[in-house]
Image 1 (cartoon, rainbow, N blue to C red):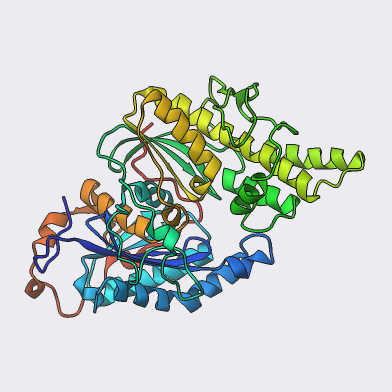
Image 2 (cartoon, rainbow, N blue to C red; image 1 turned 45 degrees about the vertical axis):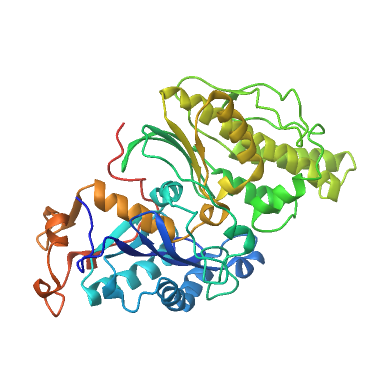
Length: 441
């Protein structure tokens, strides 16, 4: 089944809203791959003083910013009215409950008022489909462009973001997906569109959370990922060695960050072969800092902090690349890395070097699609609506399948002038939501 425009347009345009954490985002995407607009209002400066996201502050800021962000996304896509679109998509989990509520409630209101279908999207599936978005046909310089924001109302992309072109993931399956972000670290075998098998996940902290907390320990600033990467550029990779959790012991043969070598650590076998654990690595950094202080060395001194940041970053990258490479033995046709931590330069270089060596295509989104954004939510909504059956709850509580193709063939005259109460008004948010209900084990 597929979505088609009721007005006969060959494009299916979806407005997506994303408010799962501290980014207020809206985007319009055509046919699941072409970005027509992508607005993001960042809250980094609001949360920097806390060293992390303050949930109540985040949800209140979403309320202030979301109307402007959505209006600008529609304007960038030359959409005069929501009814010109084909569907509305929104992230309903996982994430911060208060933040999710803001986006879900606005999406429900827009869907009810316009009569458009509402598609709930799992945030992690959105990250996966960031790899399927085309980035070689973005708006030209001088016009509103997807990318980094500059203030609470969103903004246009920087020149560096605009230059990030390239292909996207192909239709070859199975594909191996590494989702690595502030709240999640998972290895997923994607057997087809919207068909997944979970191979492994973090047992405690996610990689991005570990970056943030280690950066806080070293007083490098927030967000932790970019702060540690910047500090590690001047670090001595041979000064400290940190453990690689859930792997067999080993060291790099060439620990110079400029001449990057493949990790020599290997994943463990058995039940935790594809699982991750970063809580102990974070504790190892804390113990190292305490040891240095007992020896009279200030662990937060600029060079020492840079050396610790280098050791920590290399340990995380070793584990991520090593386990992903091990999972590639399932006969996958391509590898995709996504999520906020996929913006890390060392991770990208290590993955590119390894998978080029074994001849597997590797896809990573451009930097502006690594962090939370609504374009990826629209892409996921398109593929979920096209490849997976749509289930809606009836007023009696029983589920029925909606024939999307039949609904798409309806003309505007067939639609009621006043949209009736819809089942999607019961759409709820979930702070902890499994990837999809179609995960196969």
